[in-house]
Length: 184
Image (cartoon, rainbow, N blue to C red; front, side, top):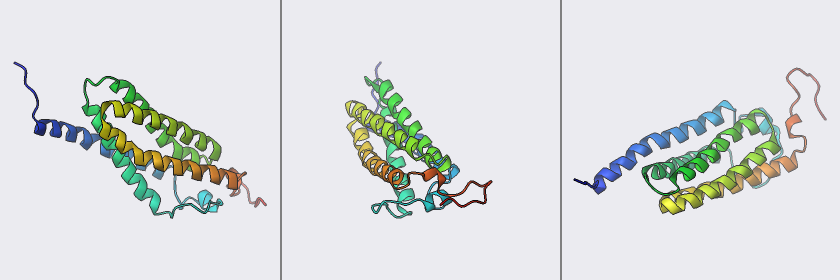
């Protein structure tokens, strides 16, 4: 006897995936930002010269919350597509870009390494484009959920680049904690 799942059963199966992936992606992203002291509350970051197109501070947590929800839903759709050709590769590429995403805040805000952070965001963008194309072959909706993220990564890369350009000695904006000297 072969039984096919009803639409309701399929929907519930997807929801079970989403109930795990969305909070996990959001929680890990939030932890990455909080533990690396990201944002305007970071004294080093506050002291940097920023480009004129820098969004206000409140925009970042709002945008990242929405983007992480979209990423979690896209991941749930691909996980739900059991047996789809290319699913393993799509998941691998997606998870690789997600690891880079979570690494960016500690590198930029925690270690104050502007140019290595730019390299990370460039690699993250390339992997995200590849993941979106791989997702498109499996679930169109998952690929569409990646589009806002790709657009935001373009903005984030431009901000990272401009901050690096405007602050050639970005790692030395504030004096070292062990020094009482003020760099001029």
